Length: 391
Image (cartoon, rainbow, N blue to C red):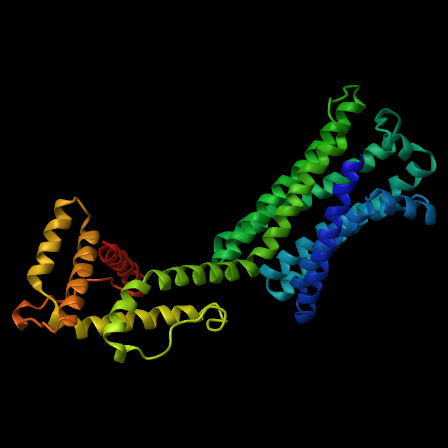
């Protein structure tokens, strides 16, 4: 029980922080009904979760006897209505969205009226206490109250699953599609909560006691669903930032891999360098800046390679191609090794003041068709060049 309560409290704290974070974002778009629906979804589930914390539950019971269970289920159902509102205002035209939102609000109120009508006599007669002891045979009112509650939850989850999955098919942004699919999967898993609860209560009511706790069996799919829905709601915003960070890492890796080739060529022809190299921690404070430095490095490599051309030898490069082919390298690897050999041999020739006749110049090897392919190919050249220089 202590472990359950500790986990319950920890989850409540985490999700409360998330509600606060999303509220700050909501203030920037406070005229958008869909954003209110998204925040209301989190708030309903989170505050419903908080009410279930033992300390909070008992404190509310002392202040207003009988209030915790009812408030918790009003909040949870309210979160379900809010997620429907989020999707309705995200998908439909404003006037049509109003009509659908009002319809689902009426459904929500109708279910809450039935739950309340069953809850009041259940609490006053002690029927609810029998439910909390899992003595379902002596809690007919509470059993029906739970059936109505989980029926509403199941209705919401099925509706949200359908809307999220349908919208994901037409979403034009990758991370939006992924977020919607996570929400759809989370809603489908949460629907298992309703299925399990009805099945468990029905089994006990008929005299068959399952060998596991009803709370654990219901809590696990509910929690898994809430987590997936929450992550799915954050993914469209944070996914592109993750992509940008990942791209920055790839650009920095390319920038470092090109360093041996760039250093050797620019050292021989410093006039091709247009600006100082990238300095980690001082340059590239925006995630897209490093792409420029990589692009700049590629240009400087080819400018220096063009200046080196009079010192390169076609015959030496042909010999490198033959050796690479004999070693069983692929075509791309062969061209990279041959280009690295031409650069290394050309730098040595320039150092000793020996240039070639124009007929023996080694022309530029074919690189890539765009910047990404060009960088990938030059990385191979730089790697081959570094290995050749190390020998």
